[in-house]
Image (cartoon, rainbow, N blue to C red):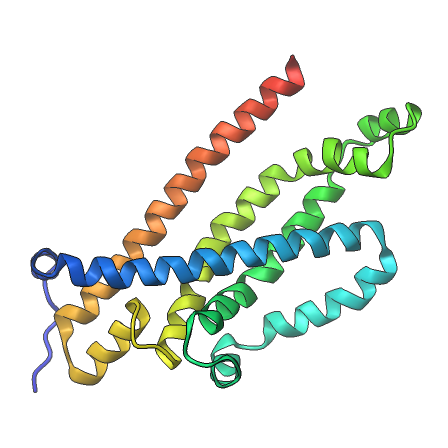
Length: 223
């Protein structure tokens, strides 16, 4: 069977003729990616908080995180799916794993990027460790957190697609695998197109939120 790369107009016509099908599977993939990204962000924030305040914890946690990061997620995915089954949980976990280390590293870097003079000012008024963290370290880390979130969006989508590829009956990853097996070229490229659109829109939304938050932060600091 001869396979021809479809024109973009042909892919768009295919999408327009099956809107419900692609919206349903796109929604599944977005849900998995968002849950995975959210779980990774919360856990990485907590771990970064610990390692910033404890060098012993840093020496214990960072090597383990590096091992997880350098292990290809494609190798871990079958084991995770065998362990957790074919539901939502393994896709969320896979998406979380690929996002965790970038979030943790950027959060820890941001927490440590405080202005020394400002830190000394907090110490001079006997500010508590909690006050220093929430009023100084966290606001200074916002740019780093947003940068990691922009990276994490793509990684979370990759993780969700890999999870769907190995163990799912829905989502864009599953549709890509199904289209490849059945040589459904329009479905293959339409699914890829939807993933690209989701990624681009996510970056645009994060950029808008980042400008709003950092602008508000700058106004607070100058007031």
